[in-house]
Length: 491
Image (cartoon, rainbow, N blue to C red):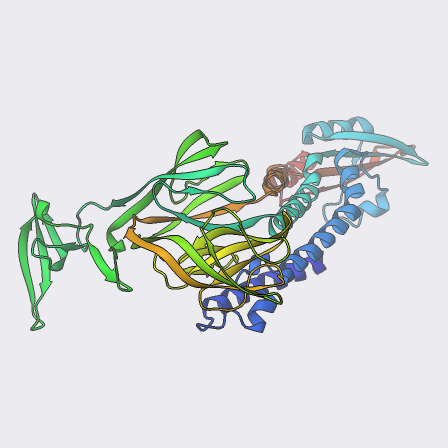
């Protein structure tokens, strides 16, 4: 058990260290060898974290196997018998003389609320009783519950995944691993009502801070160019707390006044609407083992649409220019039986921390398209293809190189706010719940029940009263049981 404690302490220390390191990593070091080797960007799915959980699971399993026979015997088996010499070593040892020792001892057990067993030995009679035997199962249940929690954590770390998806109203979000789709129906921002210390926008476009609210008016603190502070009263209905500010060259809502943001989405199965739900912070949408959490939102800015993407293809057979339509039909190449199948197009390609692609904006900052190569209808592989970059990334090795040379039919249009959802799938959830139930029952048995034991040895005397030796033992500092035992003996 000491080994398990040391492993647990080591896991906690390394986890805390990785979190601190991750928080204070300088910009640009997220892909260094040290960070990549120890997976500090996602420590709770890192190989070393899983390894420590595995070692801890093995240690707990060994502990459970070793202790189970003893705990089962203590909970359901016949109590252990002791002779008078052993009882003398107990701190609670007492001795008395009674005319009919066995009758007196049976009454003692009844008054203490203990069931007992009796054996005859040469020269003496021994009685052993107990109550609260189920409490002996508490360590077994606690250890088993912790083991299930660890196993559930390992299952989640190995088989579960987490990714971020983005979309605005009307977008349908799909994933190759899903057998359903998520349609974004609406995204809404909800603001706090006007109150003290809020920043608001005035009718003339200036902004100030609310310092007092009274009836239908509010007193606003304004800072002048001279550095002096001015205070003025304005009608409440003339003030806006949902104004826009410039951030990164784009207008975005001032988030200091936002109370919550909510996505209304519909689950689609085979293009049919199954149900609609609201996704809020701490209120995820759950379906088919997946959970969609509302994490943030982005300013829509603009959306960019491209009709045709001109791609240069270079191989040992020569160079060719082909025109592809995003998510369009395949285009044949003049060599062998090769053809290219265009896939998703992102105007501002980036990868998130889970190495999932997304478009950081609607602008053409880093256009990229996924392209598959087929040889006589047999897929050879696929790659991300970029503009003015000869070569590929994020896919299979292909016998040719591609890069985007031109974009035709580029149009931009204003975009709505983009909701950002975190999608998680944790297949070990039921194991976690089972572990939680085991731990809860174990705590109830361990702290709600007291394990009480009593032993009596009766030595028959040819003349006079029987010689009686007694001792008790109880868990959880059960002072009431000890006091009752002592009070019976003093009567």
